[in-house]
Image 1 (tube, rainbow, N blue to C red):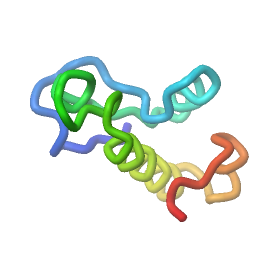
Image 2 (image 1 turned 90 degrees about the vertical axis):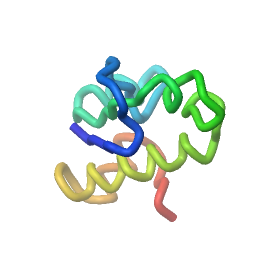
Image 3 (image 1 turned 30 degrees about the vertical axis):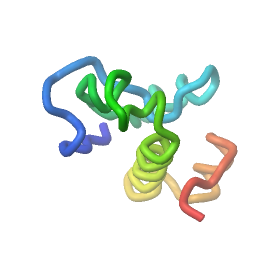
Length: 86
């Protein structure tokens, strides 16, 4: 599991980094999830649901985790359909 401690102040349920229908399932399959406090999940100014920059940061970190622990960039792009790092 990808853990970004700077965004997790409590222990809420994990958030799938790659949300949406197909990518959420793949995020679960590869265990690419993060724990977010309410302010970073869906209640604050920088929450991932309302802030595209925060959303991109989480997706980039998810891709870095994938490439370091699971597979290469080609596999990531095959699975998730996009490269978030370039």
